[in-house]
Image (cartoon, rainbow, N blue to C red; front, side):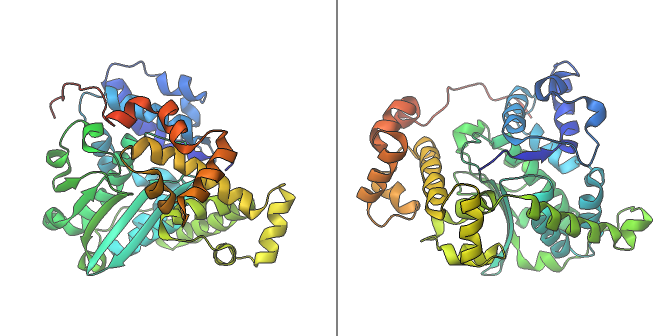
Length: 356
């Protein structure tokens, strides 16, 4: 997976938290090497890993543990120009959320945003796919807060029927967030999720002040055109890696199916990867090994066999051999050497919980 980026327009919200916590106003600019005057440039992007690392630090230092969530709920989507116009011009909640899921790649690389409907429930699911970017707890609170803003605007007094799930463990979040979130909150999910009754999708959304071009649908058309252009610029290995990371826990990875999902024949995909000096197996193996490293860190009680199964291996011995080729050591040795503390307890040092 190549370099990954996030739109710089998200920086203003983190700046507000940093300043309220006593940090200097130039902290984010200095850390990311981008002047504040460039944050609102729609073409300006910053390194995703650095952005998430910085957001974690700022979120941990905030006066309120729920500051990142509150920041998402109050974030002005209109700042995101065509993307924001596309979301805010939808007439129903379902329309807003589908556009959010479709277009999120315009804001952030190596990320999965999905709307899933099943068994009378709708779910908005969010996660960063790059396993090297961890932890990402405050990023999750911020992003789910934005989704909650849209859902609460339509559901109003029925928001309490929603449920929120974070991929972090409860002790990693330090405090019960239910008071700030205003509904049921749980932890240790495979993804970050907001779950709500499927009937919410048909609810109308309050009309938002929009510029004339957005009211005429121009913003929506431009956003989808920009999405196509963005996908064309991506390398084949990056597109395949994203799909593999999104499907690793769902069973066997099928090369022909993945090629079809990105609009190529299997033959074309193999040729594109070959142009990058890679084979499909090279990309698959690298994704599996990098995901395994994250599994070792976040699931210390899982056995090697369980992790192998999650990564699509039918035999843990096959996984062990592949991992040893990739890292030079066995999976168990790697876990013991890399995460000895988390493997024993998987807990952060106890800290005093700040008041809301």
